[in-house]
Image (cartoon, rainbow, N blue to C red; front, side):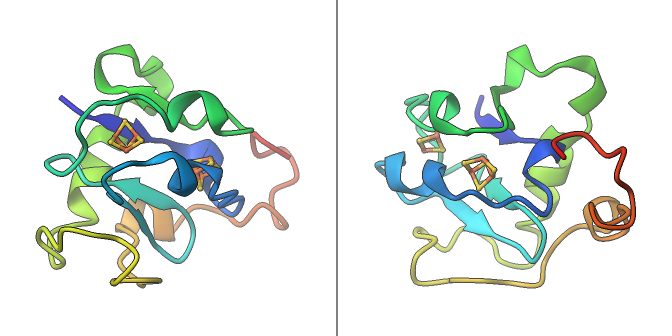
Length: 113
Ligand code: F3S
Ligand code: F3S
């Protein structure tokens, strides 16, 4: 099991979650951040600090964000398990489902605006 970051993070990237994670397993893509499903130790510290409530325990994901478990995992298809996000930094690995979302600026009705 793991915690999962979902769509409200897209184009927001508040990053308060990063400061809370004891194992540095929250990685940055161009449009959102992703939790490494194998490196996360399920401590839950990140979940309450996200101002847009983008983070959920895998079992508690709202139905509308169900696909984000796979999307978080897909982000790491090329990266593998680097064992620390700070040394990886910003990447362009957003999976297509995230990359192709309308930008918040173009879609004022998008959640989180
Ligand atoms: Fe995103 Fe929330 Fe973290 S907006 S970067 S999941 S604090
Ligand atoms: Fe880190 Fe959140 Fe997992 S703080 S260990 S990503 S539950």
